[in-house]
Image 1 (tube, rainbow, N blue to C red):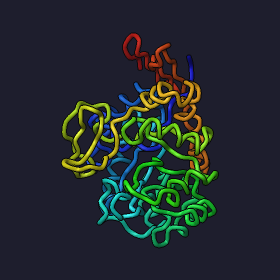
Image 2: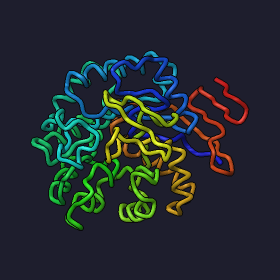
Image 3: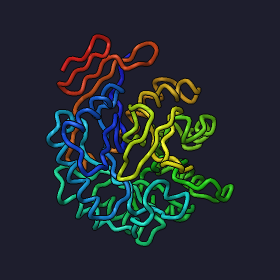
Length: 344
C-alpha cells in the first residue's frame, strides 16, 4: 500500500533529542529526524513551548542553526510551531508549560523571534481569551501564520471571534484542559462546534480515552480531524527520566510522560505511525482515512502558511506492509528501505 508521507504539526523532541534544549546540534537533530522518518514522518514542525522571550530567542537560534546544518532538516522541517507563551496560565489549562512565563498575546514578539531565523514560524498556538488575544490572532493570520487555539478557556463567543479573526485549528483538542469544567458550556464544545477550525488529536489512548476520541472525531468531522503526536524527547526512547525544556520528565512503562510526582501529562511518547494504527485498531477510521488524518489533512491545515512563506515541500511516498508497518520511505531524493536496511 502506498500513501503520502506523514506530517506532524506538533513535535517537541524525539528519540532522546529535545528540540527545546537551547543546545540541540545538527547531529542530534539528524538522529531524531532519522528516527521520525522510520515512522513515516516526512515533514514536521519542530515545536517550542512556553518560555521567557530571551529563552525562546536562544532556543530558536539553536534549533534553526541545527536544521540548517543537518542532513535531513532542510527537507523535513519547513518551519516551526510556537506553542505559547500566549496561553492561559490557570491550573489545568497551563499543563506542563511554565505559567510564570506566559504573557499577553503579542504578534510583535513572534515577528521579533522570527526576524533572527532562516526558517519561518509557520504556526502559533494562542489562548484567544488572553489580553490582546483576538488582535494577535488577526495580526498573525494576516502575516501568513497558521493560528491555533490551545491551552485555552475560550468560550463560544471568543472561539467564534478567533475564527472570525483567522484562527483555523485547535491544538491537541481535548487536552490542555482542567479535569472539571461546565458540562456543556466549555471550550471543548465551543471548538468542536466551530466548523472553521480543524483539530489535532493525540491518539495514544493516554491523552484521550479511545472511546472518547471516537466521539470527538465524529463531532468534529473526519474531514476536519488531524493526528498529531505532541511528542517530546522521550518519544522513541526507553522508559526513564529525561530533560524537556529545562524540566525533568519521566517516561513510564505504560507510555505516559509526566513531571516527577505530577498528575498532568507532559507531552507524549507517541509515534505518528502508531497513531495511525491505533485509529484503525480502535474502529475510528479505515487505514486510508487514518493516513489522511496524519498526512493530507495535516498538510491542508499547513498549506496557507507554506504558501505565504513561498515554501514547497519535497514529494514523498510511503510503502506500508499488510500489517500497517512502514516499509519504505521516499522523500525527494532520500530513500529508506526498512525491509532490508537503510539506503541513502
